[in-house]
Amino acid sequence: MVIYDLRSFISALEKKGELARIKVEVDWHLEIGAIVERNFRNRGPALFFEKVKDSRIPFFVGGLQTPKRIAIALDMDLESSEEDLIREYSKRIKTPLKPERVNDAPCKEQILKGDEIDLFSYPAPLWHEGDGGRYLGTWHSVVVRDLETGWQNVGMHRMMIHDSKICGVMFAPFQHIGLIYQKYEKLGKPMPIAVSIGNDPVCPIVSCAPFGAGIDEWDMAGALRKSPLKVIRCETADLNVPAHSEIVLEGEVPPFKRREEGPFGEHTGFYGGGKTEKTFIHVRCITQRKNPILRGSLEGTPVVEDHQVTSLNHAALALRLFEEVGIPGIRSINFPACGDPWLSAIISIKKNYHGQSLDAAKVLMGSKIGRFLKHVYVVDEDVDPFNLEEVFYAINTRFQASRDLIVTRNESGSSLDPSVPFEQKGVTDKMILDATWSMTSEYKPREEWGGLTHPPMVKVDERIRERVERRWKSYGIEKE
Image 1 (tube, rainbow, N blue to C red):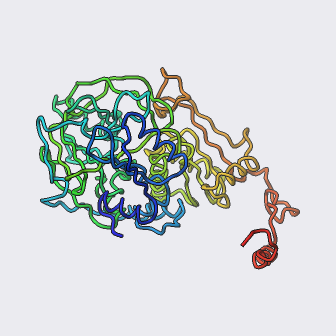
Image 2 (cartoon, helix red, strand yellow):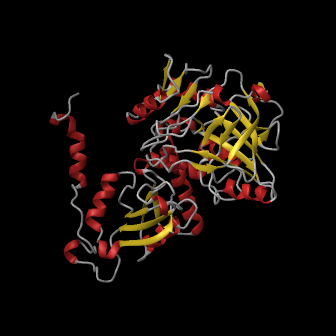
Image 3 (tube, rainbow, N blue to C red):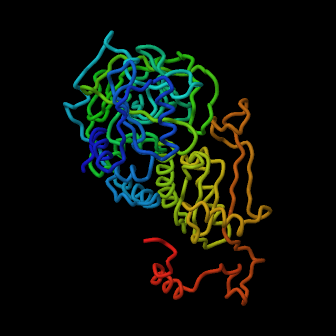
């Protein structure tokens, strides 16, 4: 089934048994959050809330929360492993496709301005009782354009509703949108901005991916969907948004002005701080489809949708990074979704020289992709980085702390890391743990180990293994 917008994606999920429709009315005040949290813990289906209190608009969540659903979004075999998804993603983005600009689109079916705009008419949840407000933007695409170069940047930045026409937009000064905003602020000009909510599932995937400066994420959306993304110009600014968006907010971020925002239950599973002064959007226009669908996602303890997609994004881009830098022997990379993929990574490598694992870890940690990593584990090529049992076993049997552990202090880190005192947020210790077999000179080949520098692993003879496989059913261990 061809997926070209949110509705075709929802249909595809439903046909594959990956969607549940909630037909009873639910409350946007904490109830949706509690339902989604329990469903995510159970690795349940994507959820379509047909009736939400105080709104005529349905709400959809969880479309990319599992590898199977990501496979549906990318039109891949449903049995694709996480490693399969990563390698295909990494392959596809080598061929960016420029978007196709159209003159008419479903997202223009309704155009709202002035008093017609009411952000509270959308079923934005109050996800957690400690949140500072209702968040309209949790799984969306924020579009801005560089004032000097004309480069269009797309990102994903949380958006809390302040009032009927104003919502927050949180970004850091070092993020691409932050650097662009500083140029507007320097000239005392408001920054035009557009927010696309609800579209082809590859759009939010690329929106939260750490692509480099100068890359238009819509080109990468075309690469992932293997056909150009259809876009249309906004009503109030020269910004391109997906033509099949459910809802598009258009507005401005004023210079030098801030509003109190937060807190918000973040991807670490903790609150990232109290209320602080942050930038905001004055919404001037909304374009949307007739009977639009609001798309969102719960943040919190792993594994939620954000963790699964971030794991995919970071691993695929890290593979590309190692190819470009020229670090040889990389078998695969996993940013485990179960531990918050922003904070740790596992590299599987075929070593050719002493220090190669350290080189690989340093390259990753020094990149935009690995900026917030606290821990990098390096394992040999015979260890599957997606099998955490194998990884833990390798750490226990191949790692020596005095030789293979590197810790650095006062590095740049995530401001959301709960292990760091609030006053020191954004600064962290970092660790590289090398669980590969040592190649130092004191480890010499030994005859009793068959010429290896380490003891051979216990293995079943391959001929016996094959014989047992052939006869397995006859043993009566498993019932028919």
